[in-house]
Image (cartoon, rainbow over all chains, first blue to last red):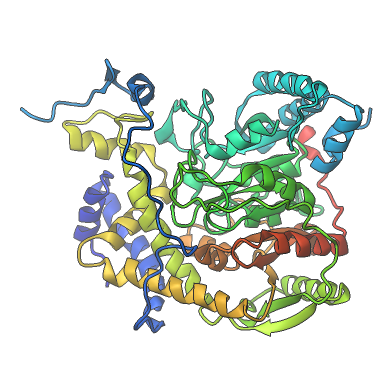
Length: 95
Length: 492
């Protein structure tokens, strides 16, 4: 699999990172270099192998479905670059 | 009074207990050392006033007989741990001005045991790097230099500021985080001890996330005993981290019996990589001889999937990072770059806020998780990871611990790895496999390179058997008798 310029542009859009047109080509080359090296994973036989999802054999803990935290909206929004009355402010989304 | 910065944590604890000096005096000596170490750029934020206040409170607690395990010990905190009311940057432009309103569990545990924070240590941006060259706040410099050469060297990464602070005697210990080697490799490069516990031993709550299935906080200090003391304070179950493991925390210091007679130490043949330098292979052989002399049995083992660990890691870690770092959107934290609409604001903020290496990994990760490629990349990598973990499981049927070099070389110069990311990634060839398997590991300084730079050996243990790692690590440390220190050129 090899990334072309258009695919890099698409991935950059998915990642919400603006990439200048002139940088797409070099970035594609760079990413292809890394992905080419990763191709060697194909040599490993992984038939009937379950993907590893957890380091320790553990199941996720259950807890009671009740409110245990909250009530400090001002703390939550305090680090936002633009906020008012406990809300984050963003550019207009709906016309 | 002799220089209070030259002690280990264990020695300082005894001196404080005996009343030889106060926590205030100990902290003041370290603040002076931290200030003098500015050329190393080990700290992003220094908090001397808070440190003095904390030391004063510590002396008061001690006077009342309420001393904790790290009472009055001055530490550096990697700037990936959220600290209430203190700027927390992850060394990224995108977190400009971020001041958490909460404290990470690990640092809370440290303060509960009486530790004193000197400041927030520099690191690679979002912990992505092996040389501390990707920080928005500039390179960290290694206190060590090659003999007869005054060029600056990298401290390793990503916990490079933590390593540099401890190696330069500016802090008695430091917190680090290890995702693929970020505690062990910089420890090796700076001649100190770095310990990555088993995944789940220390809470990740309040630690800026990089790759959640790999990230693990751990201690860095100047002796194995000091890391044992620190880990005992840092570790413990935390309901706020869904992968925190509910197990009692043993007394790690007591595990250091000094006796490893009859223990079986595995030597994995796959770690003898092509092109391994003579000094690394002879150091490794030296380590094997030390283990034998101490009465351990050396067992040759095979970890057949070792060479696939790095490529698997460079899918898994970027994939998880692309998900974790989605939160930096110009809305909730620090930096916002205005755009023509909301999407443009997101994309412009992230373009300006992230550095080149972070962007590269986010793009790889986004691609690996994108529709049509998930099975080929992420799922495949997680299956390879399962095989790597199985290799270790098989090996641990026959051995108690595994001995390897920590890194393939000593510290290198800035820009020496060129601009090929793959050359940089190879630094973690010996540390990444244990990260993927979640195993505990320690790097112990074991010798000097021909240029006079420190080199570390790595010991790996079974899951949640940090005690054996500390026990063998203590014996290795004693045999190596590594006492070299860098000349303090940075004091000018």
